[in-house]
Structures are given as C-alpha cells and as structure tokens.
Image (tube, rainbow, N blue to C red; front, top):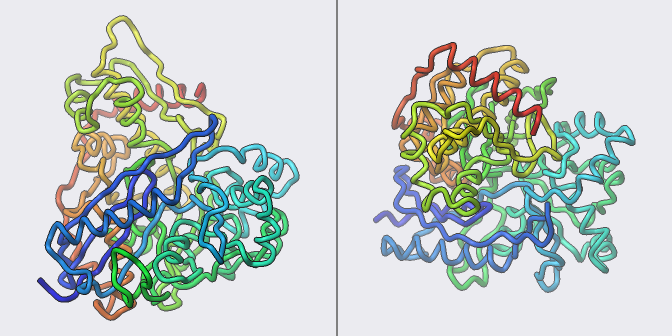
Length: 491
C-alpha cells in the first residue's frame, strides 16, 4: 500500500463516514458510524457533540483497521460536514455550551418571521444570497446567545467560540478556529462580496464578531493534528468544505452550468455558476461553491429538507419496510402510485417554496391503495421536489440543463434515478463512486499538500457508472405534475 493516504472525514446528520483515498484516486475503504438525533420538543433537533466526536474516532479507526493501514500513512485530512448545524464551545475547556442545533431545527421560525416583518429580508438576500429561514446558522446562534446563561458575555469577550461542524472538528483535530467560505456562506452572517463577516448583519442578529472563526480557503493547511487518541500528531488538516459543495467538487462539476443532486437525509441540488453570483428570482440560494488559491466559484442551490429521511420514516415511523433498501422492490411492485401523492414536508418545505409551516401530506388514498402505492408515491415525492428546484434554477440561469450528476446513498436506487430523469426530462448520470461528498474534501486536502497538482486530475478520474434516460410518457408526466402541484398547495 502507498505510504500516502488522504483521509476524508464526512460528518453528516445521522453519522460520520471516514474515507481513505490513494494518490492514484483509488478509494481504499470507507467506514460509517451512526449516532442519534435528539428531539427535546416538536421542531427541535439537536446533536450531542460528544456522540459526534466518538463517531469520528470510531469511523477513522475502523477505516484504518479494515485495510490494515497505519495512521502514519495519512498525508492529509479533509473535512466535509452538515453545513448549517452549529454550536458554541468554551475556548478554554473545549466544552460546548449547549447541544448543537441541527440544520433541520425549526425553533427560530418566529425570529425569522420577525426579521422579515421588519423589512430585513432583501438586505439579507443581497448580502448573503440566502433567505430568512430557520435552516441557516445565524438565527440558531442568536437563539443560543439569548437562551444559554452566560454565553453572550463569553461570546463578546472571545472566550466562547462559534462554528459550524467543520469549525468544531478543525478545533478538535488541530486547535484552529477556522471555517471556509462554503460553510460561512450558510450562516446569514457572511457577505458574498467581501467573503468576510458582515458587521451590519451581525448587529441585526446580535452575534459578536469576537466569537466567529477566521474564513480561510477551502484548500489550505489550517493546522496539524495534536493530542488525539486515534491519530498521531503532525498530520495536516488541509481541506474544509460544506457537504454539498464537497459533492459538487467530488463530481468534478468545475465548469459553469454543471449540476449535481445529492440524495441523503435531504436532497441538495447545486449548479456551478463560475465566478458569477447569480441571484435567484425563483427561490434559489446564491452560495459559495469553494475558494481555492484565492479563486472563488459560486453556485445556485436548492434544498429539499426530506429525501432519504422519508424512507426512514416509512421504516421506523410506519413500519411498512424493515430495511431502507427494501423500498425499491416494493415501489417497483406496482406500475404507478395508483393516484397517491406524497409531499415530504416532514420538516417544512425548502426551495423553491420556503414554507417552514408546511407539513407532510399523503393524498389520493382509496380502498385499493396498498404498501406498494405508498412506497412509490414516496419516491415520486422525492424526485418531484428536485424537479421544482431544477425548473427554478434553469429559469434563473436562462439555459436548460444538459444532464444531472447524481450521488449519495439513495442514488443506488435505480427506480428512484429513473423517476428523477423522467420528471426532469433530462439524463441523470451516476458515477462509479457515490461517496462524492467525502471525495471532494479529500481532493481539496490533497491539492493543499501537493498530492495532486490541479483539479484536472480530479476531472480525469471521474468515471460514469450508469446513465439514465427519460422514458415516461408525456401525458403520464403531466398528470403526475398536476397532482403534485395540487398536493403541495395543501401541505
């Protein structure tokens, strides 16, 4: 085995994945360790950071053990993360002041509404490219500052550190209080023009600048590991990128107009707009894709809060399936959903609707409806959300999409991917390596440490597994879209 391995740590909503990659761009192994979400109240979603940290150590140790590798073979570490999940911790003790508030958490809906009612939405959109929604980190920070005893004073003095999960992991791994623009652009606090924290927005949300991390590049050496039980000292931590931007990079979507959709707990579509900040008239977000060598790439983004989580709900909430992998066969057992429509608004509706008050809906049930129809309706609901997003994106860009690159665990589902390209009327291309989120952070870490010379090497290594072509009859698609539009209006 090569003496050089790149370690990618992909810290997600339900677990942590460690991936080992060789300089020849071969994925040696991956290891995933799950951890629980905590739901103290309706609409509240939290993570225990001790549980996250334990999952990181177990995933890294398990990946190394699986291939008999020694940690001394690791040349660099890249981190990718669930982006808007955020927390405060004590700079002196390292202990969190409160559980991390997860991106799905909706407790700040009233604060977002108050900011909109006060006329601030246009300012936030112009400065940050985002909408005022509880999804983003800024109002989560404000809530913790307002509700955790002593936190505001510690934040103002700089003793309390604020960060998204990339920042917290970098702190734990190498002691650096740092983030990158892809994560910072998800906070409602960073100015897209300056790529720095915006004083006026900080003031509106009551967030002290002293608690915020430095915004670096997505690919640089931030520090070196020190004092860890599962890794030796001295390994460069050299890549930071939000999970969806990491997937865009890992899918080699480097050219303007290229797009990808990642199917995980939620579903996330990003379209590379190059060095142009394209502001949406259709509910999309303008965000930073990455900054490498001081050069910035931007993207349009649309997020569906619930994708794979809908399948988990069928398994855990309704008991219709025993394993998530069973849904494809169950949904394929019927030729269509029998008129059943499912709107996956289990945590509100994201882009382009932005309706945090929306709730999940199943309509069209008759005496002839059975498990297969509901399973197929769930898959249709997932892909119809993506259809809404990409219609809005292409309207903003003023150009049709030539293909969609797909990834994430649910992209293994052939029926889901076929339904996706049918709804889009556009080919969907699945790569051989679906762990593109982790690949993106590994590539960035390798670029910072000289393992690879340029992104061209990444493009050359990207390989197609399967290309899905549209097959659905136009009349069938029109009826499906009509039912979907009516159901979304009622959700």
